[in-house]
Length: 327
Image (cartoon, rainbow, N blue to C red; front, side, top):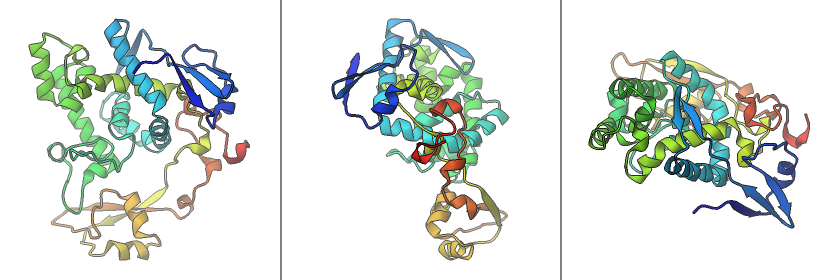
């Protein structure tokens, strides 16, 4: 459904939104009686993805991009949570992408895969921030079993994703096709490129999910650059901070993780929250395996919105805004 204007009844944040300095045509708000009228986010003529220029001026590309921008604009809760979680996970992921020579823009692929939720699991069985399938995860070095599933380990899963992306780039030679292959598989993209005489996956005739995939990544990049254009008004205090922790080296089986947690002054639920790769109430250790369990610092366990620093100042209206509207 394509609409030029969307009417939203009495939005909670409309009064704040009206005060923002929107001097760009990409998103404008005007109060009409009890309603607020919104224009759509403008589709750029071109944009850069992983250092490669993507031309969006052709009508079909423009309309496909427009669809994804609309989706991000009006799926408010999902988009806003994606930004909140990014403040916790982007700093970790960006460093690992950089260390592995993978373009920074692939963090937006991660965002659309999981909504930046490390506990995400699809009906097909993909799991974690990068939504890795069990076989793919094992192929790229992760442990996936009954008690331990490293797809839920932020750092290890990101490194596994980097290994996949490197392999795919060696095959395709351009990052757009690499991104498409993350959804459809390298074999399917290679076959489609050959059958349709194309060099870039952006113009392939594919099943709807894959056809939309790269455009969704591009839309995510635009949203993270300027959330206010989408009507998302966030303060620094709204973002999720990184949680300070210490690590305990584990070289022997832990039969009772709830007891282990209590002995460290935290609940079993909090232990699982900090270590989502733990999948059962015990941790078997076989052979020379070594694990590192994270225990949150006592001070870091309590939310303090006054000290949250936005990873990207563009995400918030004012980096110093906190609860209560004070600075």
